[in-house]
Length: 411
Image (cartoon, rainbow, N blue to C red; front, side, top):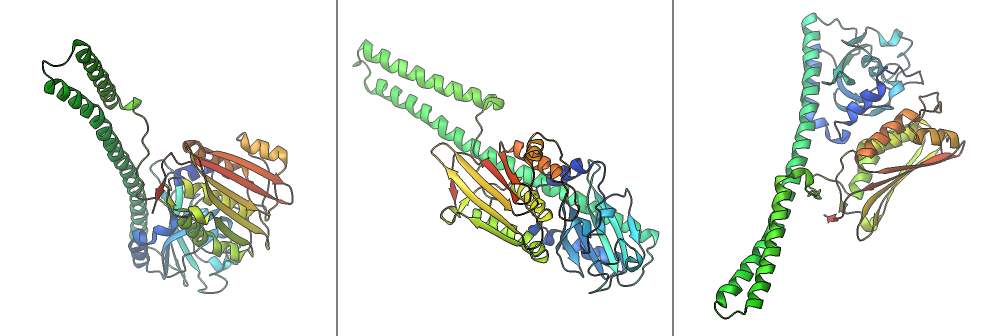
C-alpha cells in the first residue's frame, strides 16, 4: 500500500503457516483487479472514504491487487500499515497516521494525498490465517459506526470466500482437464487391442474350413494375447491408483515469454524505487513452449522478493528462464542471481537442511531462511530441486530445476 523509511517488521507466531496458506491459493497478482474491483469500490462507499485497498501480504511484500482512489503498487512489507492489521483478530484502526511514529513518514501520508485515517480488516482464511487485509483510508479523520464496521467485515469475509472459490475452480479445472486427457488415452489404448482382435477373428471367418490347425492355433494365441492386454487395461481403469500419471493438456499455462512479462510487471516498480537493476532473460528459441504455472509464480516471487530484500541500492538482480530438453525429460530451469549481501557456506548448508540462519537484510530485515524453507516445500510438491551458491558480500545464485513432463506444448 504505502511506503516509508525502514522499520522493524512485526511477524505473527504462525508466519510460516500463514504464508503457505496464502501460497496455496496459487494466485497471479496481476490478474485479480477485475475480480475484486467492485468489492473494493463498495468498501469505500460503505465507509465514506476516498480510498479502499485489497492487499495480500507474503513474507516480504504487500501486493495491492485491487483498489479505489489510490495507485495499485506492491510495497515492501515493512513499509506498510497493513502489516499490523494481519496481527489482529478483529480490525486495526489508526485515527491519525500523521501523528503516529510508525506511519508519519509513509508516502501518501507525508506527501501526495496526505492521508490521515486508516481502518483495516484482516482477510482470514478457513484455516485461521490472516493472508491480507481490506482497508479504507481518508485525508480526514473518520468515525465509523458499528454498522459500517460490520459491513466492512462482511466484505472482507466475501473476499476470502471468493479467493477460496477461485482456488476450488482452478483445482476442478485441473482435475477435469486431467480426466479428459486420461479418457482420450484410454480410448486410444482400447482401440488397439479391440482392432487387433477384430482383425484376427475376421481372418478366421474368411478362411473358414481352409485354415490349418497350426494357423488356427497361432491366430487363437494372438487373440488371447490381445484380450489379455485389453483386460490389463480394464484393470487400470477399475484401479485408478495404479493408472499411470497422464500429462495434462495445458490450457491455462504460461510460456517463457509470458513468465518474463509477469515478473517484470510485478518487480520492476519495486526494483526501480530501490535503484536496483532488474532484468529477466529467456531462451528466445524456446519462448513459446507452454507449461503449467501451478506454484511457479509463488516460488519465483518468493526468491525475487528475497533478492530485493538483501541487495543494496545500485545492485543487480537477474532472472534466467530456460528449458533442458532431452528425449525423456523436459525440465524448466530457473536461476535468480543477485549482488546482495550473500551467505556463508554454513548458512547455505543450514538452509538446505531446513534450518533458518540468522542472516539480516540490507536494512535489518528477516533472514533468508524462512522464505527458502517455503520455496523448498513448494518445490517438493513439483519434484523440483534447489541449488544455492553464495559468497558473503558478493551475492547469491539460486537455481531451480522443475520437471514439466515428457510432452512439449507450443502455442
